[in-house]
Length: 238
Image (tube, rainbow, N blue to C red):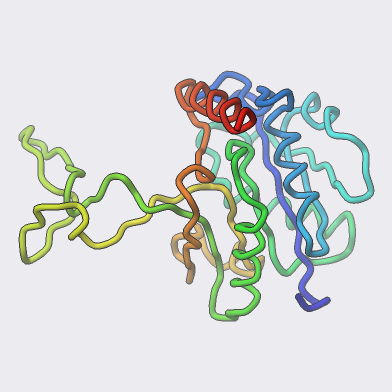
């Protein structure tokens, strides 16, 4: 990695989670999801600064003071349930520039709800983004167990269903359908210039780094959280 590539790691945790109550400070294996994400950020081999963004003073105070961790208070308008995370990224970059007088080249977001991420997958995303100058974003995904060409349907107004995607020939087995990836927020490596150029990562030139199903688990509901706790306990036993 070239020295001119200033990479910051963003960890975002708003108060008032809808899917899982107080999700960001729930514990898995004796450690909160916030602190697990920070631990992952600190394990990365490339030079970086960690930026923790939250609307919650309580959450901000739970983060240990460190020269390597910048704590940014997020305005309430960027902490609503419908607030675009892309706008949160813009706020992080602006505030980081004010604090340090440096403009980062790349922002790497580690979602708090993905505690099974692998450090190697994060680093592969960043290396791919740096190597290919045409790329704006590299994210993570896994081969989906559901496929819009085979077993995903959209309901029409008349109550009947139709396949989400159609091909010229009928597909009778999922294995014969075009490969589809489900995105996981394990990692979003984004060129900072594109965050101000586009309204969302999906408009940019992006690639998906494929990861394992196990490492892609994203906690969004109480059921997800129960599964994650069981899986964590099982992994530790083995």
